[in-house]
Amino acid sequence: MRELSQLDKSAPKRKDSVTRKTGTVSVSYRAFYATCLIFLTLPVIIFCLGYLRPLIGITLMLCFAGMCAISIMECMNGPEGSRLEKQTSAIDIPVKFLILFAVTAVVVSLVTGVGEYVFTLQDHPYRRAILRDLVNYEWPVIYNYNTQTNPEVIKIFGIVSGERAFSYYFVYWLPAAAAGKLLGFEAANIVLLIWNSIGIFLGFIAMCAINKRFSFAMPFLYVFFAGLDVIPNIVYFFTGYDAWLWLEGWVPGISYVANFTELANVFNQIVPCFLIVALLLMSHSMRSAGLTGGLLFAYSPWAVFGLLPVIIGLALRKEMKSGSIKRDILNILTPVNIVSALLLLVLFGSYYMSNSGAVSFRGFTWTFYEQPALFIPAYLLFIVIEVLPFAAVLYGRYKKDPVFIASVITLCIVPLYRVSEMNDFSMRGSMPGLFVLCIMFSGCYSSMFAPENQPKDKKSWARCATMTLLVILMMFPAVVNLFVIAGSTITGDESNKDKIGSFGNIQDAHYAKTIEEQFFAPDYRNKFFYRYFARQ
Image (cartoon, rainbow, N blue to C red; front, side, top):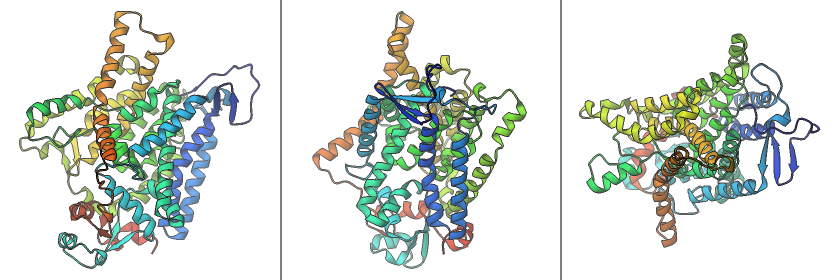
């Protein structure tokens, strides 16, 4: 995106990054880019300083801080190397939207259970236990089986002594955990709520900047965007077929998850993923795409597989080309891109591989069907419900955009492979592509109702009606979950947030098997990360 707003060229140039005009706050692209990149990089730096051996940690901290600084300095350079004027890349934010977005971001964080101040959905016992253990345990977090006191848990584990290392993509919690180590667990919850709200708020602003329009449709669709899961849910209501699992799990082995459901269960992955996608779409060149995109590996490794095609599509965009093939290649093969990608891959790749058991359940999706031929109609129905409606309404406007094409193709390919019983590869690998469609759809929907674009003929009225119907139908998963959260909070239903407590002393044995498979790294001392990188 070359321009966020075009200011009067005759106006005097300003040296400050933030200026005020009547009713608006004008923020330079550099200031916004720096804020987003620091937000994404700071937890990685905390990981380096807190989890790694001092010499390695300090070295990597300086490397990431340096690459972040270089990216910020170069963010105003176009693909041909010329510097863009601050005036041609300012984000003019109406004050009313600035306030509205900030309040909405906090409300969304609260309602989706961050900090566990309301009734929370099924994944929050894990999330609360992760934060508690990051606050209470020394880093790296190591568990000893002899601290388990629940007899049922001990029976499931089958051992009463020995150590296991904590293994999960937990980087998003580190700013809150660091605050908690100083001020206590409740302070950590407050900081997590604030941190998550900042990430959502930046995502709102980025969506508007990409679409060059401030509208409440942006945060609304950020929260409510989803597939048309209401249709199979209606079918299930009348049939109750056996393969049914959950709201978005109506096809065996495949699921694309609604934004609200992601925000309410895996905010640690979805919020940074959304921001990274938006920041890439706002980029003026590919010179720092390796750092921006690579940071996602620290937050959601499966989502990286869905992000790579988006980055390839971005590189193929006309505005990302300099006119020289050599320069375009050099823009991709910058030291920042190469070094950041290698460091993030080695560092977090070795950490994740400490628990290889978490990915032992994997293979092509059809191999998990009793009759593999049945996968074909299931797959086609899934694409028709989850991808085709949005691809169809956006096609006319974005058919020549490589990012749109790459996103749609990726969303059609991701369901073909399965990792984990719930298929984390499908749920997380789809996040970047779905958010690209979310941004594009929000831009189309908000511009459609702008005063200058009011429908005037049958065709435009039909398009408005179609888009509005899609919005209404896609809200189904969020509305159901909101009903559960609000109703349970009002009636005082007991939340499940403390049913685990700590992975070091699990209260409810129901969670023990999942925790051992997905969060414990056995024989960790012999794993590459703990032998060479981790604090001893």
